[in-house]
Image (tube, rainbow, N blue to C red; front, side):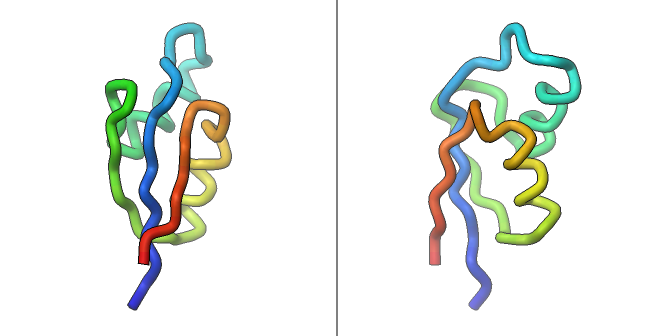
Length: 61
């Protein structure tokens, strides 16, 4: 069974660069405390890395 990541937006994107805002939007997050579950792939890890200061990430089995 593939691992999944539970991603939560914990800080606002106000004042962030447009590329960072687009990254958060690509992950499917719009509002603070919104949660999404994504597969643990290198692509998703890269998106998380770009916006890591705005997100909280947990592994889900």
